[in-house]
Image 1 (cartoon, helix red, strand yellow):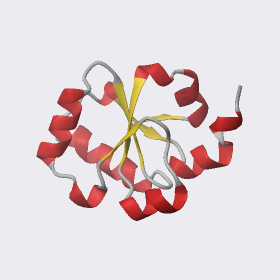
Image 2 (cartoon, rainbow, N blue to C red):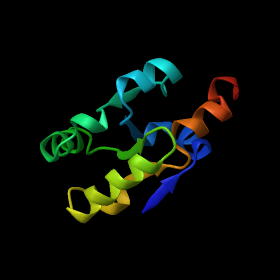
Image 3 (cartoon, rainbow, N blue to C red):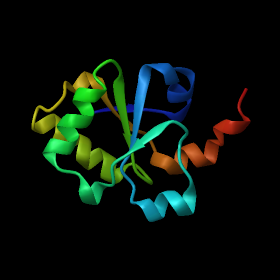
Image 4 (cartoon, rainbow, N blue to C red):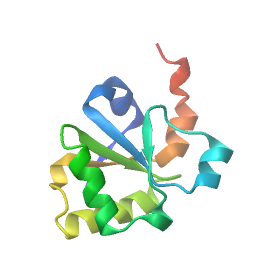
Amino acid sequence: MKEITVYELINNRDNYVVLDIREQYERLKDGTIPENHHLPLSTIDIVKLENFIDNHQEKDIVIHCHTGRRSFALIKTIIDKKIIDSNKIYNLKGGYVSWKNINPENLN
């Protein structure tokens, strides 16, 4: 499974679509990565995943949760079911916690 760091995502943001799979209460409590899409893990099924991937074929997909564990498991399922080429999907290393710790808004 491929992982991407926050720095790699920031430096190549135009190449990726970001999917946040945290629950809504987590997003309200902790914040979000700008310009992301949201599908709570508790509501995801194969059809929703296939639709999301079909609608974003022009870019690679970065999936994240709070720490990267749930997104890792989801990506493993996606790859095992061959829903997307494993070279087109990434787990955000460290999840949203990494994003928040780096605080990209302050980077130049």
